[in-house]
Image (cartoon, rainbow, N blue to C red):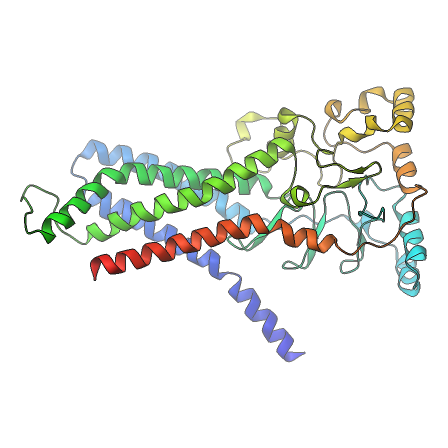
Length: 390
């Protein structure tokens, strides 16, 4: 027990290493830009003021959204998705998967769920002992089930899901703007210092050039780091913008959610405009602020698939025609009880499916590639400047 406890403590400490690394890089970039560039290098007062005002606006929004992404706890399913004590005991006693699924089907008949496993089984988490809502997955790093889980991000040491997905998108956007502004404004001084280095090496340095001070290293390295981070983050931000437009998570991109009629990667898509509002909310004045405005509760999601089932279409048109299409549904929405009962009462055999965890693992692939690119760029930059100045 003791070695296991020590190992977990070490893992928790090491998990903060990427966050500390980013914090140190950001702190250094603040010093390099404000002190070394604006104070010691730029001579024009007007240029200093303009640069400092815009820089601090982008810096504050970047740090604010980054902090919200890190410290916003992942949302977990409510108690209604947990098995009762009696059902839990009966579930643990049963050895046959069919009997266990019968217990889960009975417990889930009134829950707002549309999706199943690939083998048409109810999605159940043995670790958390609860029935998973739609788009919910268990994170092995956080050891909890996360609503609308997208991925676990090591750079924020947190799960990105329903509660902080908007913050994560804003973090990517403001980090891009921050890096772009820094790189664009530092570029002219980067060129001047670079030229100064080459002329000094040739012993042909005019006296009216920039002084050869310690600011040279900071300005040169600041441009390189800003440009490399911009290139690395741009692909990730573009990818998530595409996901928002399609109303998919990273996990759902690698494996489409399974509905009664089978897998459908666009099952939760309501059109680009409504997909955007589902993440950012109805009030556009809050879209660019890291304030939670996402629609819904993380458990119920409008789906366009209700109208694709003839039986559901008949019942929907008789009872509530306005709710038969996901594109016309208000937020949050709760699926029709008739649709739930028919979904869970399907004649298909309910067999426990195991490969869903592989879906979560494969969902990390794209983000791991971006992580490796950032690390390679940083290490390459450090090596380059070590060779340059040594």
